[in-house]
Length: 209
Length: 407
Image (cartoon, rainbow over all chains, first blue to last red; front, side, top):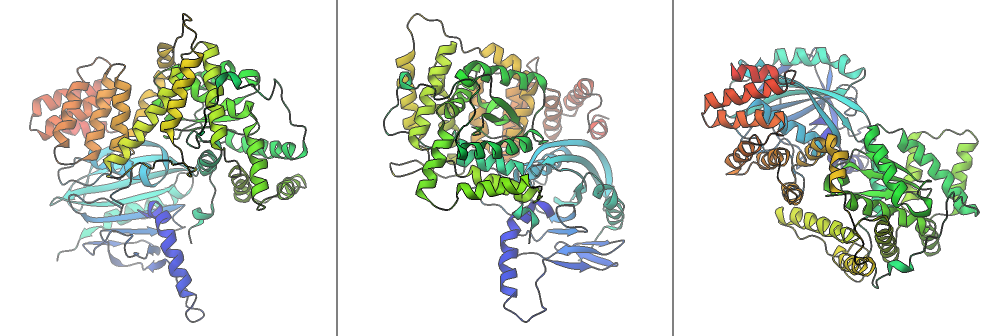
C-alpha cells in the first residue's frame, strides 16, 4: 500500500536515516532497493513476478508493514506505485492499524465477494490515503493466478488535490487474498506504468512451497 | 524522506486552520455571555484601516484565492447558492460582504477567515437536521467576524509570544509583491502558520455562540437548535470513542480543549432568554432537505466508508429521528458490513432487506441485497435483486460482474 503507508512510514524512515548518518561516509540509507529484470518473489515469498524493467522496491519496515504486502514504485510513491498482496488471511487488514483508531480499514474475510474486496480497497484509500472522492470505474471478472478473479478499476481525488487512477487484479485462493494493485497520478503516470503493471500481472505465479 | 511530509496541501491548510483558528470545536466561556449584549463591531462594507489588519487581509486574499481554486470544493450552483443565501440572511451587518465555500471533506467543521470568507465542510451538511442548525453554525462563524475575533486574538497571541511579528508577515507579502516566487509549498506553509496564530479564547467562542443564537432568532429560526447542534456533536464523539474503547476527551477548567457540555447548557439558557413567546419559529427542515437532497447519498457514502461505526451509526440514528427511509436503512447496512464483526453479516443483510422495501431505496441497496441473498444460498431471490439493480443502473460500473452472478 505504497502511497498510503508512506505517511506512517515517514517517521520511521526519518529515524533510520538519522541513524545511518552516524555511520561511515558514503553509506547512506535508502528506503528503496532496486528490483532486477528477472523473476523475483514478492510479499511473503509466495508469489513470483517478472518486471519488464527495473523498479524500486520499498524496504519493509518492522512494525509498520504487513508481511504479505510489498510496495514498488518507479517515479516515487506520490506519482506511481504497485502493491502486491500475497495471501492475506481472514481477519487481517491490508495495513497495520491501531485498534483504537476511530476510522479503520475493514478486515479481509475469506468469504468476501469481489464487490466486498473492492469496498475494502475503497475504504483503505478513504481512511488512510486521504481520498475525498473515490469512483469505481469498473468491476469485472478476470482470471488471476489460474483462479476466477476480478479486475477493479477506480480513480480517486486525494487531499493533495491530485486525481489518481488505480487498477487491482486479484483473487481469493484457499481463503486468502492475492492482489496486484497499480495506483498512479491520472495524468501521464497512469499510462506510463500500465504496460509494466499488466506484464507483472501476466507473469504472476504462485510459488509452490 | 517523504515529500508529502513537507507539503501543506490546501486540505491541511483548511483542516489546520479550522482546528486552530475557526474552531467550532474550541473553547467555552466560564461565564455566560448574554445574546442581547452582542453588538456587531463591524458594519457593512467593512475594510481594515490599521496597518497590521491591512496586512492580514492581504494575506487572506491570497489564501482565499488558493482555496477558491481548489478542486476539493463542491461547485454545485444550487448548493453554493443556497449557502450564499443563508450567510446573506444570518450574517448580520456584513451579510452581503461574506463569501462562502463548500469543501468536500467528511468532517464536522466550518470556519471563518479574518477577511470575511467562510469554508463549510460537506460533513457538516450531513450532520445538520434542518436549516436552522446549518444557519446556526454559519451565524456562529459570522459572529467571529462581526466581533472582530481574528484580529483581536491575533493581537493577544502576539503579546503573549514573540514568535511571529507583523514584520515577518509583511516581509512575506513584500516578497510576493516584489515578484519573488517562493513556490506553492512555501506560500501555503506561510499562510498555514499565520492561520495557526488565531486561537479563539473561550470568551470569544461564547460571544460567537451568543451572537449566532441572536442572529438566527432574529431571522425566525428557533434558537434552541444552536444547543441541539452541540448535543449532536457531543453524542457523536462519545459514540465514536466508546465504540473503540476510549474515553472522549473532556475539557476541564485549565484546558484549552472544548467542553461542549457547558457550552450546550449556556446555549439552552440563551435560547430560553431570546425566544419570544407567541412568535412563530420555523426550522425549515423541508426546505433544507430539498436543498441537500441531490448530495445526501454522497454525504452518507463519504461518512460511512470511513468505517467509523460508532460515529456513523450515531449519525444515522440521529437523522432517522426524523423518519427512516431507504437511503438511511441502506447505509445502516453498510455500517455493519464494513464493520464486519461476527454477526454483522446477517445484521447488514436485514438492513438491506429493509431498505429495498422503501420506494426510495438506492440501486446499490438492491446490489448488496442480492449479494447477501447469494451468500445465504437464496440464488433465485438473489438473481431477482441483481436484475432489479441492473434495471435501475444499466451502466453500473460493476455490471459485468453482476451479470455473471445473475447469469
